[in-house]
Image (cartoon, rainbow, N blue to C red; front, side):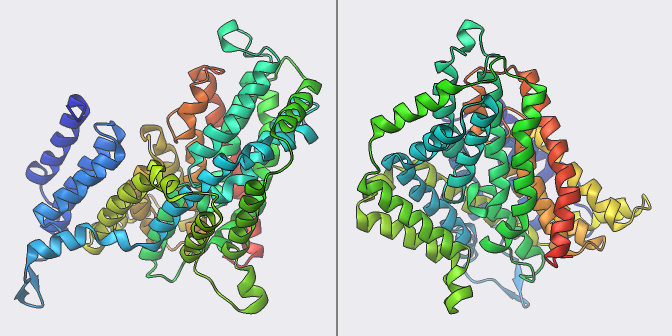
Length: 493
């Protein structure tokens, strides 16, 4: 059987209830309501893991194409010609979305960090420099995640496949092993730093995690492209509050979960031994580093600032992959084997397509107006109302196991409601973008890297959730103070 019966049945029941049983609200078209039914069913299937997210996406595309919910019955008073053909075009429409291809291709490029060993070298190099104390090891892990973050859209690969093995080898070198009951020596602290550094990095770069480009897309749709968060704009906005969060996080976790071992000279020794085994930087690593630098310069818009030459962010990503292929850093077989990239392109396209048509058919506007009316009825101004919207959006992530599913389900309506309340569009976009990153800190299933790091068993579930909630509050306070002041200086509100 290709699906899990219980979550699949729950998703089907929700779809049928909305489609056939729940009355269509006034002001909502039947098409919009039926698409909502399909959308809720697909999101429920993703949350319940009825099928892999890619398979659920294919199912969503199929249902949209077969039901024709995106095709109007009349167009300018005339019946639509070939509605079946139009329906499948609508279902596949987001496959030409440049942001989707940017994130998918960037995932393939990030394979070069693993294949060449450059990611591991960066991590061990930082630990060899700053790892004489446990706190220094924590900062080294955080810095390693931050350095490789811009070109690793799979935060699971970054936090789980690159940084986590380094963290684990250091913990075991100090005999901190959960199987021996010695996780408190150093492993518990380092595993939590490993995860929360991964989360903070996610909110600092568009290309650091898959949901971020979806946020960019939904903001542009809601503002009719008046607000477009480019790679450079996002990075500059998140730079200062993100760095403050990264600076405080290892220290706060050190105070809450103090490791038994405070001095770690062995960590620098281990890192140097690993670097010695790796030998001098190989040609492939140097080439990968060069490509890495080229991507950062182009994404940040440096050529445009210096020479007036603008290169599109997605075109930059394709250039990066082309350079990897031309130099032999990656082969086409490597690209084909990067299943997570192709999987991301498929499910991203399906969810973006459904979100786009929910917006076009007026449902997101209706939901936004309903939320706005409810908050206005409470007598709140836009400042308090938007804070309430953001908090509700962020902490709703306790019931989501996918950041992308959460963004697709809630971001558009909540952002639209904030705009309707009178929030400055750029300010509220940045607030919601920050919340999208912060929400990943909450649980052991909140994002892809969480189950990998949690699965090493250095922390209990209670400890993980405690750390997640505390870090979410700390990061909210940072963005509510440093973030707002920084955005004001930048002229974003």
